[in-house]
Length: 336
Ligand code: NAD
Ligand code: WQD
Image (cartoon, rainbow, N blue to C red; front, top):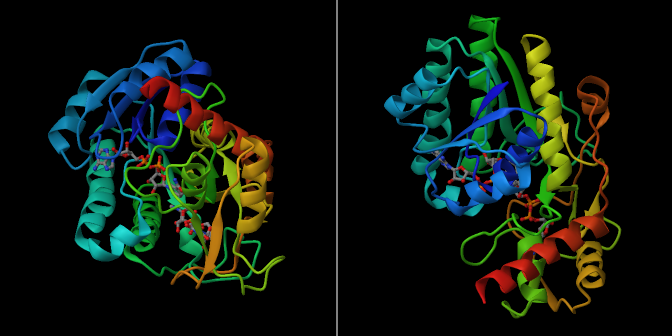
């Protein structure tokens, strides 16, 4: 199939593009490079052993999208493009609604115009909001606590309405839990700009000596050791989940949400210790008060994805930490 991948040079998009090329698909990327670099294109091609088409552009630019759909017979879209920082979304809500919600509406309009009606969308476990009733199931009630989460919930609702109006659409809403790790080659991975917000990139920078120490946000949750528990999933498993979702939308119309997680939760302290073991470095940390908006535990029920997508995560936490560390070390070599 010929797949348009929005946000294809980003963290999750790049790993998914490699899997798409390996699976024999033709790939066309649109990315405005607001949070990624053009060099990633060549790296994806090396790893996927195939070339692809890259369009620098914004999904809100209808002319650019129409140019792509005119030149390529796109069979399906995997839609990653979006802004993803929870904290930033609180201070820049209009940018988040415009980029994520308006961007998606423009994309869907162009898809409808060109009769391309298969889409796999990057939603997030953030749509389960402050619900603490783990494991989360796809039909649990949804809520949000910040503009970023609100954009994901709104887009899910827009897509539900789109399907009601046009039942030829085939839509998979993928609710990712906490993607970490990197491609085992160390060639692509996660490189957040500035000081990371998320746990794993922060730990990696402490282990490599770039940052002094990690602040552990709270040790008084009702969890194994009091620190927050999350469902960390290897980026390679997550990328595979997209191939399964693509097969799903290829086979039938409809709209379904799927959790992409491992179903297992690990605490912040467990992740720190796993990373120390993988990197053979000390990760210095101090406990500070809880971060506002955080919940104690968040992990997935994986039953629906196993049953319907025939997909499940295979890689464990030590492998996630090893691959994340390998990517950091490889980056150091390249930048020397
Ligand atoms: P990322 O920032 O690495 O990738 C997103 C890509 O989209 C970037 O390359 C960016 O340049 C591009 N982009 C942003 N706005 C665009 C626009 N208007 N037009 C064209 N390109 C645009 O993020 P990621 O971690 O790869 O996340 C991909 C998707 O998955 C996002 O929608 C994100 O909200 C969602 N998600 C991510 C996580 C996570 O923890 N990484 C968890 C749940 C959901
Ligand atoms: C994980 C755990 C923190 C940093 C976020 C988004 C979510 C999704 C994934 C996009 C928590 C603790 C963290 C630190 C810490 N993204 N922590 N010190 O909050 O589960 O999810 O990313 O959709 O929407 O909200 O991930 O990596 O920030 O935190 O103690 O410096 O690590 O409290 O328990 P989170 P995270």
